[in-house]
Structures are given as C-alpha cells and as structure tokens.
Image (cartoon, rainbow, N blue to C red):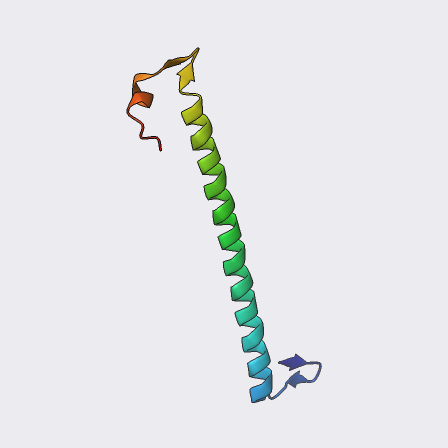
Length: 71
C-alpha cells in the first residue's frame, strides 16, 4: 500500500481484500472466456448446418452429402 508519506504497513486484512479482488477478477475472466467460447462454437455449428443444408443444389444432392449420417 502506498500513501502520500511513503509505504504503509499492510495488515492481514489488507492482503485478504487484495486476494479477494484478484480471485474475483480471475473468475470474471474465466466467465468471459466461457461466454466467448460458447458463442464461437454456436456460430461455427450454425455455419456448418448452413453448409450442410446448401449441399443440395436444384434438388440434386452432391456425392459427399450422400455419405453424411442423418438422424
């Protein structure tokens, strides 16, 4: 801790508060990464579905699409 007169002695409570702030920042960063990854995976899946559905042109299926497993 720094004040206008120089260094201040830090207590255990000060360290605990700093520790809690760091842990909260880490948790927020992890949550943000989970959201970004989920969004990316959802967009990738939607793009894949669109590509699969566009594999038929004029009602004629491409050879590769005949090999796709559909449920």
